[in-house]
Length: 141
Image (cartoon, rainbow, N blue to C red; front, side, top):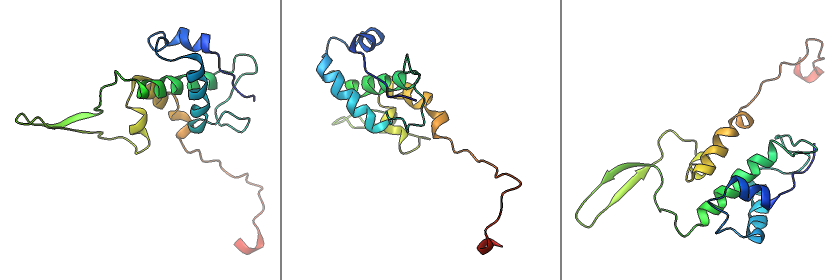
């Protein structure tokens, strides 16, 4: 495996709607921040091809778009299903039904929702059957 390298030109081509408000230096900072959510080292569970860095670079790009959208001044403030609404003095409450606690943060933007769906396979536990010839330590007998 290898470490994915960010390309602002490639990212801006994929997310042209964000390019006018996200400068290259900001995108690079957001890419570094995205590394806090998705490991971009050789130890990452998500593979990175030696030439294209895929699929890890694609997922990191989604995270950069998600982080950029969260920072956008045009962003609407509410996320989730409207649970109740009032009229006098206007009050609205929303809920995130059926979401894992970690997933709600990603579902605030379309980019985060795409990332959350695309990474489902990496969040699934896998049972590995021990070999039949495995020796049992004496203290477990």
